[in-house]
Length: 326
Ligand code: ADP
Ligand code: MG
Image (cartoon, rainbow, N blue to C red; front, side):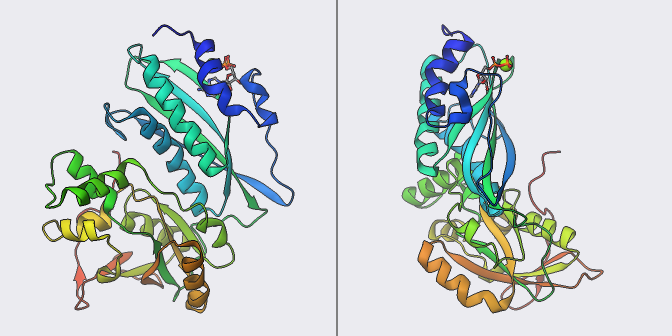
């Protein structure tokens, strides 16, 4: 690559800091960020690695937007409104300036869409694949961040959007799934490449949800996380899990396991008392974000932490609870 580190920062990253005073034009050692009055900052970092979270020939602007959005999904699940982010980028020496230019365009597009600024980061070279770590900051009213803990026995379990699309999209990309319909296949791939973090809904769940988590490791695995810290068990009715038409058609041949255990949904899984059902329905309509009740929380039992029931009420066995790296 022809550009030096500082030229690269000045040309491609400094423009993304414009308008955020505490970023000092990316010309200082560090940035300054204060929460809005009555709020505190929620911070989250997530790294994505070439060959693991995205494919080496994925369009760089989409890679950038995914890197940002996986963090926004966490902020949304915590009820925070996104405001700023930092970018650590590790680049192999073979990366081209066009790649970086496209990557920066992707960031520009999404930071505008989500009302955020780049406020700093680090740039290094690596003998390995492109690696991108973004840290996102968002505002939440003090003491009100949505937690994984807090679900109560009898609370309903809800999910936003549709489940399993991204896991199926990844199968399509890997050639492991041939979808009967090309348009549907593209929809699934798109859901894998570009998550839609529920940033408008998340903050509105404060006061309604008793617990919340971002679904990234798979619906069942993430529900298990809520069970653990809330010290409860859960029942999911598999027939209620919302599937897109494209996923439904694919699952005619695939087992529903892919939807329940596949990762990368970046939807919000939350619990709330039944008394909030009307409020949640109104919110879902007002924000045009689907919200579906899929099960219930119950006291912990000696059996499985999360039980999945089929249409006839029989419990389904699962060999794999979700995606783990190791
Ligand atoms: P240091 O030498 O302390 O590591 P750098 O020279 O790496 O600092 O960074 C100089 C400035 O550029 C800092 O404000 C840093 O936050 C910013 N910066 C470096 N890399 C990036 C990046 N990839 N994205 C955004 N800002 C960056
Ligand atoms: Mg540095």
